[in-house]
Image (cartoon, rainbow over all chains, first blue to last red; front, side, top):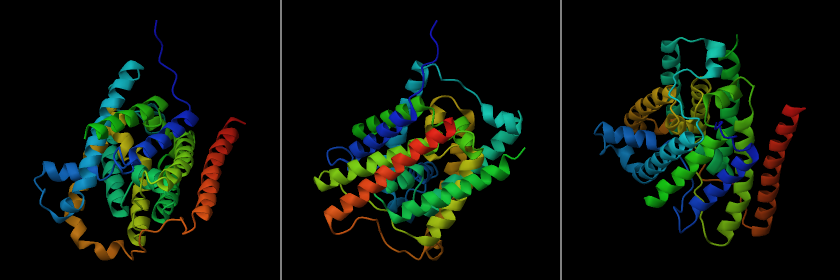
Length: 165
Length: 171
């Protein structure tokens, strides 16, 4: 009987992610570094017919690149999770249940609110974990290093308050 | 476009196979029970910073530094950190987690799309709030040798922290 495949080690995953971003940056590839958060307003704008809004024109290029990139990520994650037998449709993650219980409306409320704050924050700051922390960090960009530091502090303080038993 | 999708597929596979995309890993970091997120990101930035510098030196890539809008970066970072802690995903890992069947990630994506809609309407009005813009600054200097030293030390330092966290957590 097949068992679940062992996950990649943090070291190998970190190296592969750094190398992948350097490949993306190559002039013969995308000639840009990885990002994810611009795809959200971009897709939202396309779905709601705001395509002509000034902000949509500003983000047209990164927005469409990230949309195709994340489409690939969705496919890649689906394939990898099916092959490794990790694929499972579920609403409430194990660690959430341990601290917050089994209530579905509660998880849905916090997931929606969290997703809203996450993307609002990313757009105000001009990037997310991918575009700012990973890609910006790799370029030693001041904005990204400050963003990374602020996020870690805010994330850990919120975690401490929100998951207190 | 095909290249972009292929890069995305590899990205999705790396994240999914390392399990760093899951709520249990990211939410576990917020609970200080799992440090995989920190170790993978620090290693990736460390390795990537050195390779990217060499790639740029060879003329095969260019910098794309984001502007340092002090207000936007700090205020946005605070909101982003709060959202990431209660959601347990970030914008990229939301999509990866949706790919492996996480329904709460789909809910988070809908919240993110709603924020995207609000932001499209907000953007023209909030220019003042985001500033002052300090420009596209990074720690590269005019001297390639000095920059090489800075980048190498920066990269080695971050990789070192990853190993340190790893050792601490096991010991």
